[in-house]
Length: 115
Image (cartoon, rainbow, N blue to C red; front, side, top):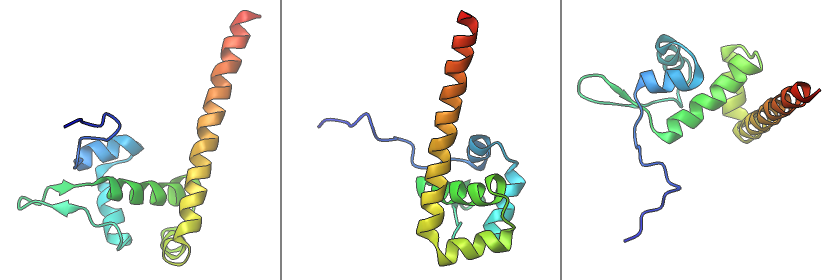
């Protein structure tokens, strides 16, 4: 049986790992769980949160709306409830544009060293 190398083998992430992914405090993630009803990571018997890829995608949308675009929590919650597809597309576009900007800045810095 062949194993696909493209798939992420990790099923669950700790709150510490997820907080590091977004450079936020763990307490902010716990707060967002209360503020956004769609964000419900699994918990073990010891109350340890286990985030799946789906949970991380939900956090990515919330992060984009609140931290990047500056929405208030109520407005972000409303956007996710009423126009989730639009919020998802906007988040992907902003992420791609940020990657392109970073690449262009890197190219510019390489060109500056040549001059």
